[in-house]
Length: 54
Image (cartoon, rainbow, N blue to C red; front, top):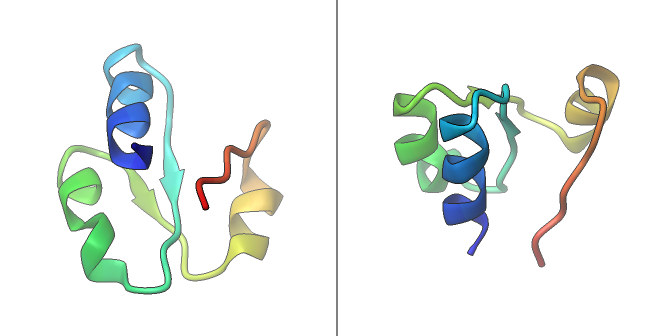
């Protein structure tokens, strides 16, 4: 669900920052242009909005 939502946001022209505990799970999004951040704190420092998937 989170990957699909992130892909739609990128398709609409938004910059997407991603974090997962296992970076490899975000590889598909990173290859499509998302930016990886190694900690949630870094996402919060660089983002105007945060969407959390649990």
